[in-house]
Length: 126
Image (cartoon, rainbow, N blue to C red; front, side, top):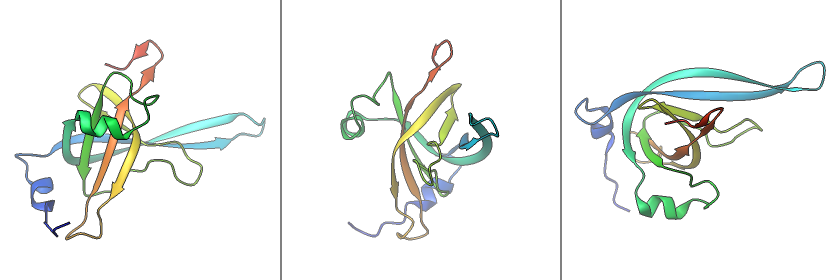
């Protein structure tokens, strides 16, 4: 793969936009029940609807009604240390990260994630 530095595009306000990453942490309370806490992290990056090629790479069970591809300069986590996957809040909807790619070793570094529409209390968050 050529060592192209695409971070100029990621930082360009003509291409990037704001979105929130919801970092969810699971703990157990004194009664043995699971408790999920959320931290909201505002980020900028390039967000696009997921292509059919991208959706082919994820499990069919995770492919719900839609997905997005996100490229940004900060790490968005899939599922590490027993925590839940991050969620991305963008365009009035919430998307759960189902795939990630670390490109931090290229040029100035960036991360790519694939996220699918989440199922909320009243149906899909659209």
